[in-house]
Image (cartoon, rainbow over all chains, first blue to last red; front, side):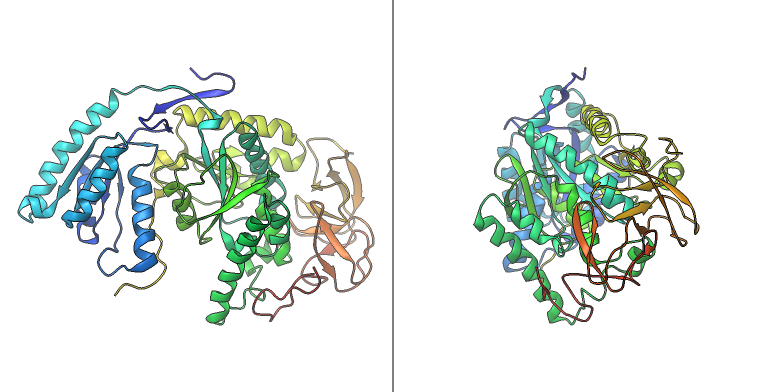
Length: 388
Length: 107
């Protein structure tokens, strides 16, 4: 039963709430990715995450890989984990971390199965089946907006994104912050051109400096390879869709952060440590950006698009919004929320905000999004450098 | 004319000097524009593609162009009321093409 202000979710032992109760098949080793996918084909209810990179990942890259895989393994929407690996020490470290979170976990290591992937497949299917049965006996209980961390994302934007969908998401972000929840926005390159507005909202001068430093660092990396970010921005697709200047594009993008003060800047995949609105310094490409939010514990994603974008998170239900009436009319099995009424004056921002919050509570309580139904989701582990 | 189901223009901030065309506009079209301060009726003096901007008042050369209450650039020429506003008459106020890096021109 969904109350007016709340929804129903799975309460985890550490107090966090999950909107889904997934069995996660997590391959820690690149060598066992195909094996994990094979297990996932026999247990299609499970979610499968793999990473191709393991050996030779060093320094900050190794820390990032660990941070993201851990974030997926103990994600609030994950009820139990089947850990697949061929590195016994790492498998044991992850198994312990997951067990400490109160989740059922089975670690299946190739070395313990005579290095036989077929034998491991058999053991994994049986273990996964038992875990799925136990998960299905768990029930939801009341939760509210203060229990949520939501990620806000835009991809394949058009001008309607900047004046309707993103401002609408911004109003929901404000509502969530007012209710005591957490919101995270990222895609650092999208701040470029509007960073002066973000800096004005920083909760302290240190936070303002972090925002500026994050943008400057990416600009330097682009300069170092000779990329002309200004001449190439907005790109030809954006120009055709009516975006004239870099700041017009960025201003439209940052409206999805709402108006709340910015509490701080977290690293890619790092959990915001307190309530309020946070920025995450991270890549702008949606698969990487969204996985950063998910690894940080975001249980739900609000994802605006213009003409259409099928991609969603694998672990976090993703509400796809557009204000493009044509896209909403055609992409019935992709767009979860039609925001075009705000553009045409048919719906006020106030009414649309209430409607989107109601949809969020429905999705939180178990109503599926099209991305979940159609399997359009993935999680990816970003790289900072090359492997040895 | 300004029927709530027939708005073909949109302004996010009532003080903006541009509006967004919600449909492709032909020269001479009268546009019902939804704004936070209530509907306005404006005419375009040339074709404006869907989702592109047009000026809601005359804008001097080198003057700020506003959308959503923020400056999105400056004009590179005089822009007449009802004219299409885009890359041919609007340039970034903060950066110049060919600048590699965040060289802010003014603030």
